[in-house]
Each structure stands twice: as structure tokens, then as C-alpha cells.
Length: 222
Image 1 (tube, helix red, strand yellow):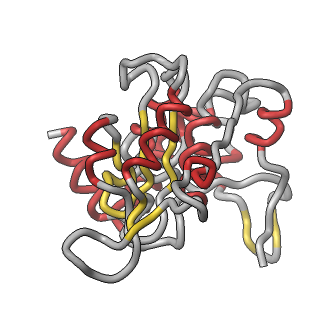
Image 2 (cartoon, helix red, strand yellow):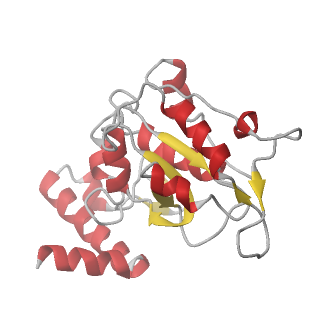
Image 3 (cartoon, one colour):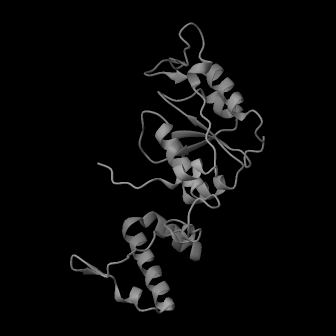
């Protein structure tokens, strides 16, 4: 079961703060059956998306877009790509737009990635049946950083990973729930002490849960 609220990215799409256009790869398929894949060269299991299919699809997707990859990056969701980070999402949010290639099967002909200067991005060390879910995660992480999408822009500056640390615990009313109380320091009204507590908790959680991030944080401050 999934407990959820209405996604802000959907509201932002309805409000015209961003746009989404999808292109079906099958429309560029070859032959009677509109084939989009073929067994890998050299043998092996699975199928590979064909260069002469994916290439024309990317040409269609990129028509009228800037050539500069910083202004309009072309991204391939791939388990062998660079892990998606908050810093990466922040850079993507500054672009005019992006083209995302959702892979399937054993992947995409390498020549396509080379020809179109494609950035490979991964959600983590696992494999999905296709790149669509990964693309949705990338879109959500990026769109939420666009102006006016979130009600409070300052919240993106204080959340996990924005400063290299995990976010501190959050609390709200009621002051006591099932015998658990909000820490006194958060109700003290002393902003200096609140900031200090939040910093200490961020550091504590990062050390405990993400020692890799903590190590990077220490190197950055040294």
C-alpha cells in the first residue's frame, strides 16, 4: 500500500509551470512489425534497442531544442549511469528543457549514446524493467526545483542533500502524540539554539545512515 498526497508536480503541470511531451519509440520501428530491437552483436541474451530506431526518435525529440547540452541535456536512464544527486537535479532545473530516453531490454546501441552526447543517469544499484519509472523520478526531482512549484522556495535549501547532509527530524502540532513530545528546544523560541540542534541532528543522522556522505562532508570542510 502506498500512502500519498496529491503530487505538486501534477498541479504544476496543470498550471503550465512545465510541459511534458512523450514520443513513442514504436512509431520509428522498422519493417512490417515495427521492430525497435535486435539481438546483441557478438551474441548473448536479451535484445538491444536499435541505433536506426532510437536515433530518428531522438532527432524528433530534439527538433528545435538548443544544441548546448547544458541548455538542453539528453539523458538516458541507465543502471550504469552516474547516480542521480540533488546537485544534478539542481543543474537540470536551470536548463531550458531536457530529453529523456527510457531504455528497455539489454539497453541501447552504444553508438546512439556517443552520437548524441547522451548523459547516463542511474537511480541506484538495481535494475528496472524499463526507464519510465526512473524518468519520472528524475522529472519530479527536477521540476520541484523550478520557480513557483513549491509553496516555500526556502524548503529546498534546508532539505536532505542540499548541503551535503541528511535533513534533521521535523515535528509539528500536536506538541505531544502517543506519549512522544516535540523536543523542548524547538518550542523555546531561541532561533540560535534551534539552528544548532538541527545542525547537530543532521550530522548525527548522516553519520549513522550515510557514512559515505559524512566522509565527503568531512573532506569538504577540511
